[in-house]
Length: 291
Image (cartoon, rainbow, N blue to C red):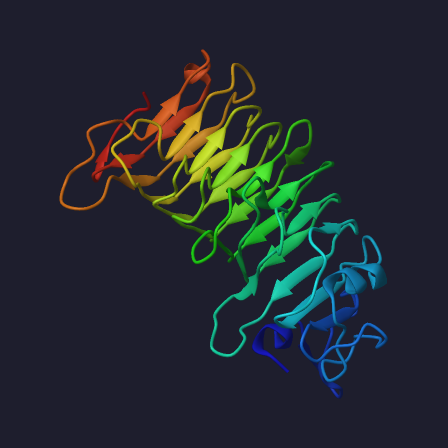
């Protein structure tokens, strides 16, 4: 059994390693060796697709889907079970499980609350984000993934208007230069959300681009290596309203190479700058206030 799957087990006296009683079912997916006619709860007899595994999950039971290998899938996969956890595992020496759509689609569309996604290297279609919020849901946890690092996509994570991702946590991800637009793009509502401890490497558009509501949120400890000396390239909060009391702190940005960045990588527009707190954000290692 893989290391990530082993983390789901705890020692219980007299029984050895077992799933804790509060944990839901664990389903295994292997697109090379799986079969959707199997039950999928034994890693030796995995399912073929994530979609089939989702169909076996129950909302609010906190079921896990462990993706063991590259697989066959019809994209996008709509995540419609609340509390489900979808985890990629190391495969053949690759740190993250690669997910690549065959057409112009997203990989995952989140349409339920408290969805966790971790352990994947994402590509997506030219007009899509790899992960899209496509319903008024939230409290998701997206972590330890790579977006546009090795594969192409428009956005890494996209909150599409008029849908919500309120209270969601985006942390410890990598966003790369194969994104044609933004790393994290918020076109509607991610109120009370957190974007923490991510790396943005030469993202073509903006690292974190909020055009709508991000009130009572936190954006902290992100690292930006920018592709050009352009203002607002790291973080742009451009909502006319809806970013009240957002705390932006300890982010680090630079143009890269041998030249220091001249323009301000942090921009707040729309008349709400006084309600956003910037604290300890650095350009070229020096703390700057937003433009």
